[in-house]
Image (cartoon, rainbow, N blue to C red; front, side):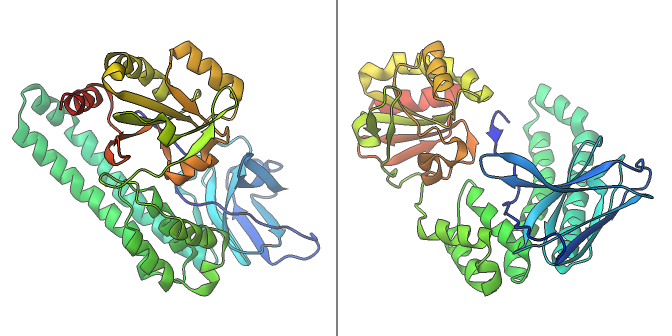
Length: 374
């Protein structure tokens, strides 16, 4: 899958710590086999800063404890120095416990509070299904390769259907979890993640959000969902693409309407995005072939460094229009279009109606050629 994804499967919040003498939470863990004196870090994801350590403790006789003050539930992580991988858990008031397996950090256990008990149960279910999917792929890899070589479509379809059943099992569990668990903080995280789906069911999100407890709605991710609902625009085929404007490389302001042609590609990319840069030569060739026939492109960069953005434009020969607020994933244009992965593209007609999304290579060229030949 040639995309760079935001490295986060669930929404992350902030924790406020006050006087260390007082505490309303504790995180206690056993780490059998880990050397005494090894540092354990309590970490959180912070916008614009990445993962930061907010507290720490040393392992003594195979155990550690971290205490502090939590204002509201939020996802945090435990990192054991020298061990690859982190343990995600929900930090909130109460006594949280975990068992760390240093040789298999992903199988570590969490619990002690209702939200962490729920997260542990959720993790176990998803791990079982994911293991089934992995086993199926391993067992049928040779069979699939043979079928593809022989162009045996019946066998290929059969294997895809069987694999799809397992995917659907996981999807059904995660998509129905929030409506079935309106008091669980995990429901807020999963509901927020529904905005990342290729097709956003805004009515379902509104209904499920309304069923959540008032306490959950007032959490940071709960308020974020409310904001997304209030500002949601249907960015799908057949709807008008929202207009936007942003700074150009030379410091001027350019809007989508100003950059439109008979056909326009809105191209979300960044200088640091490997798949985007790899795709650029074919987009350049496409633009050179069809620009005189009415094709325009406006690139929206998720860069943070203006110099690197301009350097990439020049190096890749991207001679079309460009805008960027240099705000990474929080770029207001990217937020408006609910961009969670790049490259991402929208093809719009001269009226601004979205015709297609996320086409690449030959498929993109064929679509542009067919539209401009009419």
